[in-house]
Amino acid sequence: MDARLIDDAAAQGAPPTKFDAVHLQILWNRLISIMDEADIALLHSAFSTIVADSRDYAVILLDRHCRSIAQAQICVPAFTCSLPSAARTMLKLFPPETLKPGDVLFTNDPWICHGHLPDFYVIKPIFHAGEIVAYYAAAAHVSDVGGRMDELIARDVYEEGVRLPPCKIYEAGAPNEAIMNVIGANSRHPRLVLGDLGAMTGAAKVVEHGCAQFIADYGVEALDGIAEEILSRSGRAMGDAITKLPDGDYPYEIDCDGFRKPTHIKLLLKVRGDKIILDYTGSSPQRPDASINCVLNVTHAHSMFAVKCALCPTVPNNEGLFSPISTVAPEGSILNAAFPAPVRARSMTSFHLHNAIFGALRPFVPDKVQAGSGSFWWMTCSGRDEAGDVYSVHVLPNGGTGAVLGKDGFATMAFPGNGSLTPIEIIENRAPLLLLERSLRPDSGGPGEFRGGLGQTIRLRTLKGAANLTLRPDKVFIPPPGLDGGLPGATGEFLIDDEQAPFEPFSLQEGQVLTLKLPGGGGYGDPARRNGEALAADLRKGFVTPDAAAAFYGKAVE
Image (cartoon, rainbow, N blue to C red; front, side):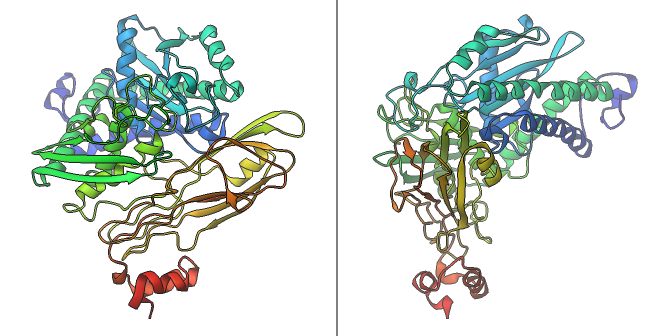
């Protein structure tokens, strides 16, 4: 047993029970590095642009009790909250004592997973000496699960694609061909979907190998011990951060675009000692006519990420970190939709929760919160190329992030997700599309003492023939809000040949040009307080035009 495991009994061969802070960090980093390797394996073996280029996936390590203890560093952060609970739900149907090496569990049920059908979840037990010692868990947004082409309009989840209850897609290492056939038969792009599913399950081998090496070096007791330490210390860290806030009830309300009518998000943030309750009672009811409803798993996950960013930004994601926080939303509301509500475009709602949370927390931690962000939009392009082959490309462009106290927002960066724009070279290689422009939008960042991040302009056309496009824009009517006197960022626009494009799926005909203008982030603080040198630099770089500087910054432009 390694001397780095601090326990007097360890010298006599007893299992270690305590870790000092330094060696805990060393071993924790090793687990995180295992997941980083799995992340790379999945990334390099994925088939679709939504996984391989937009990075809409996550890989995490669960302990033997299905509690998350380590996550790859570049993964979608909100999956950390929903993957463990999904794993525990699946294990109620497939108890651990019935599982064998090589078994892989699967589901895409939105009420178990992350709120919509394209999110595939896989869980694989990791064995040592015949016992389960941990679980590999992965989530990925796949290219297509059937259903309507429309992202925003459905009457229930049945219209949105195939929904598979928890099942085994591999049993003792052998694929369940019946389930694979069902998935492939219900997708417009089965090669991409099944290829990504293979990448998700294949990355588990990296984790199995890494955990075997970890156990060989430190013993299986160390894996159990470090899990307890990670969870307990992370919970205490979040609890300590919460105790610095004054007890009380702190309301905040926002509106966002919704679909065809605004969505209202009402939050009562309750601080009780070392606990926080996020109560969304009073938010809009669930929509029977729009796919923008959230299941409670998604509401909780996106709420946790915002609280973590504000109160414990440096602690790596794990389940213990979120134990002092609970989320409440009445069933039947847009933040706790009852089955079988349509949920495909739930990010149109959940990606606004951080604005309410940051608004409620700003009076107490003004240096730890962020103004509203302009990300993200969703676009799929599909059709047949000149050779008659089917293509499908996903593009997730981002607007600017909101400013924070002391720093301008970032241009064209994802928040609260972790996705990236599919590179132009990949888009043009995978589909007969030509990108004509990708540029920063002047004046799109919300004015403030600290300016919001700039959005971007993207222009594209087809090389030959028509392309089928599905677009999910956001912050087109209600802009990303500013904070503490900062002004909102610019709203987005989407045009075909300078005319408003439809929200419904459409065909981009040969010769037509599609223009996307992504929103900017909100500003922080009174624009009149902006540093003159910072404004001069904005003017010099073209981030702010002279007219906007005069209109919004006043004396600072002199």
